[in-house]
Every structure is written in structure tokens, then in C-alpha cells.
Length: 600
Image (cartoon, helix red, strand yellow):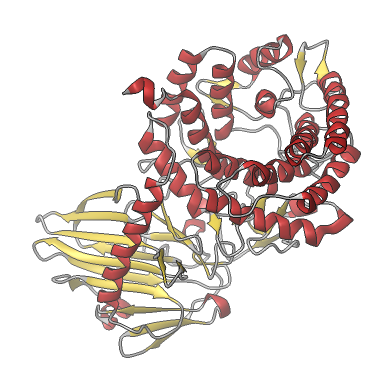
């Protein structure tokens, strides 16, 4: 059967245990079980190498459908799709992953709930549930029970569909009249204790209440509230609460540009990316997410010991995530390769030491936290500071993870400085005068060294690496880190050069030089938000606000963003939803919004 050509205008549902992507036609086209970096049971987005294009999806088709409308229930991760056929019959589909507090703990099973109900007339629908195991290579064995279908053969990915719908209609994919509410519950291969419809309806009410409460706790800006709330919910869905890990995205191998081969697995926790996510969520007041991540990195630091930190870890904190190519998936729109794992875990990326210190610094200052950082934790962070001092001027793969070369990257060095600088501030907080003096003196010397070596007098700009010629959008973050004043003539000159050489319309490339795959063909979404913030920092606030509004217009229908955008046609590329990009929305809104006091 021919499936529609997919794009990244996808909804995300989840509960911080699993997540799934839902297309505008209500087809679930991506979802991993039993956690977000596991086997993609629903892998249609990457086109399984099978004869039927619907394999690897959970599709619901309204016969003779002529219109589909989709939205999130307000302030929630609950998705509603309304379908209408040519005769006016109408069907509503509600998709969500249960998440709510019960018995003193958070209930977040590896479960997808799909509620289907008629809104008008007698709609006729087909259910096409076609999971795949082993990264699309294997069809499951389907075992029929009295009110359920078990899908087996994937080991940990095995699951069960429990429903009050006709099992024959589902197995045979035959059309059936939907004249009463139906519940389709995909979860662990276990017996449900109550009827699927009653349970699904109860879970919907509880999950809706959870998200209402969570959103009410956010310290949002006065302007752009809807955009910030949607970005915040989506960031939350990219966290794996069992360990506190923050995933860079929910997908693998969505190419950065058509046919580029820049297809990477982003379903892992990068220490750098996670710092920016946690910093942003903390600004909104979501301290529990921050506390979870601090526990995660505490475990990571203890495990790594004196061996140094690697850039990324699995959702469960595993150090090894070997990269391999999967032949059983053709790739997004047939654009392989599809990769599982990420070779970058073996790279040297020296910014990680600063990223961990910066994230951990909150625990010494935020009085809202259950337990504050102490001298023992500070001593642990000091070992990372010592490591930062040792490697700040050594070559690494840099923030963009170059695979073919290493350089002394300015951003990596600046992050090392930021970690050392924050150690001085933490020592002051703890009243450790001798340690404050030590780290402060080291930070002053390191700052002078970095600003001298990163400056190219011939170009009159900061460059991406010591002694280099190339511009890098990460230079826009230097004032954010605090290593240079935004009105410093050197930064202003660098900003002007970035505008001239990296900017394309409203978007920015991360760099324009050749790398392992040639020259980048798409703009990196977060860089445009970095530019917005830089404009505001140098006093060009009106320009920043206007650009921010235009960037918001580039979001998907439901307010999300991918990793990359094609400046020529606005198409979304790269892994999705990209936490970096969502962070950009929130940070720029917080920086630019009028205050509540001024607005009311």
C-alpha cells in the first residue's frame, strides 16, 4: 500500500519513559520500546525494507476521509485528531502516554493509549497495527487472547494490545463501524486489571490533571506563553526520568539535509546539550527535572573516576553506545544510512567538564532544592576543574563533533573557563576562601589566554579554533558564558562577521567551511536563537524581537522544531524534536518578553 510522503510536521506524545511521534493523519510512525533509545517498534518514519509502506506504523484510517484536524489538548502532551469523511461522519482520536502521581510516586508505564470515538454519524475506520522488531527486520508473532493481541519476538520490546474493539477487525484490517468509544491500549505483555475503556478514560483524566498542574508551576514570561509552554512540555518529554538523563532528540538518522549522509543517532544524553536544557527548564522553575539530571551526572562522574568524561551516554548511563548501520531500514524518504549508536562517545570533547560544573552549580545556590551541594560534592567538581585546566588548550572534536580532524576549539576552551569560573563562585558560596582564591586566579589567567589565542587579528574576529580562519556560530555564546562583554569591540566585530558570512535570511549556519561531509547545506536551528539573544545583548532589541517572531512562524503546526531548516524552502531536517531548538524558543522568549509588571 502506498503511504503518504512523510515530513517532520509530527506531534510528540510521551511520559518520560517512552515517547512516540504521530503524523497529521493519526499514524504513529515512530516509537521505541521499552525506552526511548531502544528498538523502534514503530519505525515507518525510516521506511522498513518491506513491500508495504505502512509496515512499522499504527495507522487509523477513516474511510473516505476528506479532512483532518489535529491539536494538543491545552497545556498538555495529549494529542487530539479529528477526521471527517465526505458524508459528514466524524471521528476523534486521542493519543497519550499515561503520566500522573499515584500512591506517592509517579506512574509512567511504557504504554500508549489510543481512544477512538464517533463525533457525528457512523464513521467507518480501519485499524492497521503493524509493528516491527529488530530495527524493522522482523515481523512479530501475533498471539490472540480473549480481549488482547500479544506482539512477540522482540524480547524487551514485546508488547500487548488490549482493547474493546473487534480483534478480528484489527488482525484482518477490515473496515468497522465506530458507533461507540473504543480504547486501544499498547503496553507491557501483561493482563490489565480493569476494562480497557474504563482504564483509558481514567488515565486520560489523571494525565490531563498532571499536565495542568505541571504547566501551572512554570514561571513563564508574559509574552509568547503558548510557544514557551509547548516547548517546555516537549523538552520534558525528552527526559528519561528513571535515571534523569536528557536526550538530545527522540529519533535517529533523520538527515541534516537531503542525501547528505549526515544521519546520526541522537537518542542519547549529551552532557553539553543537557546542560543547556536543564539551565533553561530551571529558569522556568522545573526543579525536579534538574534534580533528576544532577543525580544522573553524579553517577556518571563517579563511574568515570580519573579517566575523564566522554561526551555522551545512553539513557541508562551506559558509557558504550557503539555505532552500526542498520540495513533493514531504508531511511527517511529512503535517504540512508540508518545508524544505531553514536561513535561520538569515543571522541574528545573538552567542553564536557565545563558543562557538568555549570549544571551542578545550581545545586549550591538554589534554595528550592531538597538538598544543597556541600564540600564533598565541591571536591568532586574540583577534580573536573583540574581536568579542564589540563585540556583547555588541547585539540578535540569540538561542539560539532568533527570526525576527520581535531583542533583547539574556542568553544571548548571557553566552556573549560566557565567551569573554572563557577568553581570560584561555588567556593565563595561555601565560605572556602583559599579555594575561591585559587580558582579565581586560574579563571583570570585562563580567560586572558583564551581571548588572546581565539582572536584572529588579520580577520578581526574570534574564530572557531586557535590560529584558525573559520567562523563558528558558537562565538555568539561567549557573552552568555560570561567570558567576554557583549559590548566588547572584539565581540561586536565577530557579530558583524557572523551576520555577513553565516546568516542566510532569518537563519544561521553553524559554520560554512568544509567538514567530513563537505559544506553544510542547511541552517542549524538553534544558531538563529543564539543570534536573537546576541542582538538583544548588544542593544538591538527591536531587531531581536522582530526576528524572534519570524522564527516562531517556522515551527511546525503544533509548535515544535527540528535540528535543521533549509533556508531556501523552510523545510525541517535533522533529528526531531531537537531539544537545542526548543531551548532556543524558551531562552529568547525569557530574554525579550516584557515583564508582567510592565505589561499589566
